[in-house]
Amino acid sequence: SQVSRFTRDLLQRRPPLTFAFDIDGVLIRGQHVLPQAKRALKFLDGGNELGIKIPYILITNGGGTSETIRCQRLSNLLGVENKISTNQYMQAHTIYKTVAHEYADKPVLVLGGRPGAIPRVAEEYDTVLLLVVRTDMQQSRPGFDPTTRFAAIFVFHDPRNWAFDAQISLDIVCNHGYVLPASMRPTTEAWSMQPEEPSSVKLYFCNPDLLWGSDYPTPRIGQGAFRVAFQSVYQSLMGKTYPYVQYGKPTKATYAFAEQLLRKRLQEVLQEGSSGKKGDVDGEMDHTPNVYMVGDNPESDIAGANAKGWQSVLVKTGVYDPARGPPAHQPTHIADDVEQAVRWAINREF
Ligand code: G3P
Ligand code: MG
Image 1: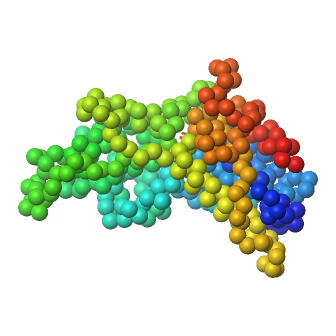
Image 2: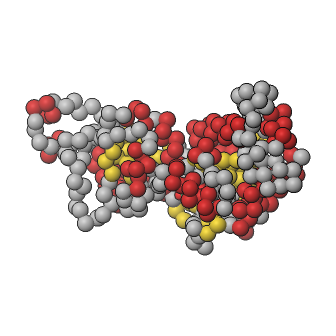
């Protein structure tokens, strides 16, 4: 699509106006698309009186499928003509790409999502030798080779079977990465000499959401609730919680990753339709983008945006319910829905 001269001027001459949209509770609720979302994205994609194209990204604590597949599905669902690019999309576990290389030759356990979906996602992350928990409870013990020593546990998405996922995680962290204690493992020479240093199994979570806005009338518990349950069981058994790495909104790491994505998207928009003539696109985008984050969850969307120094707009179409009092984190603005949020921001900027 042709990017108007005005868009280029707009993006190159001043901190460029950009948006970051949360997905669940803002653009969609479950499989239901909010009609306001379609209008808001069409407006930003150039469907406005000036033909201005305003860059935006989608940043969700959801996940469970590959970024490529999710972008295709969202483009169809939201009616975005020029397909949402993977430079516009960040889900809970996208940031795992920054640590996958540390496990290039070590077995890791991945949890969450529909059985079988996650391995394909993780394969896009250059993580090899993935072993996925079979979440069917019929098997009293997972069919893992007892000689496998897991280096890490990655929770990729909201676990479907908490009991099973918590059990296998406990087995691994309590047995130094193995599913069985030393006394029950085959005593091969090389093996039994394995030093039993304190468990070095790293535990990663990528979505701290206790609650999220689906198409159910009230918020649903999310991956953050599974982490609380796992830590409560571990603490009851071991007298302390197990150390873990937390990614996802509102963590600083996730918002820093999102800003880098926004810069890539800005460059992509500037390159679109540019004739390649000198001066058409003034080199790298070195402005810090002026970001408006639109979200429905004060704990993840508003808290994270505020901490990042972005403008934050809280909408009433998801987790946040004004009838239950003021939000735990004060946004720049409160709007009924995403379309009102975009119009408020545009009027504020121009
Ligand atoms: O599992 C999805 C949920 O935790 C939140 O998704 O899009 O509102 O960040 P989102
Ligand atoms: Mg949300």
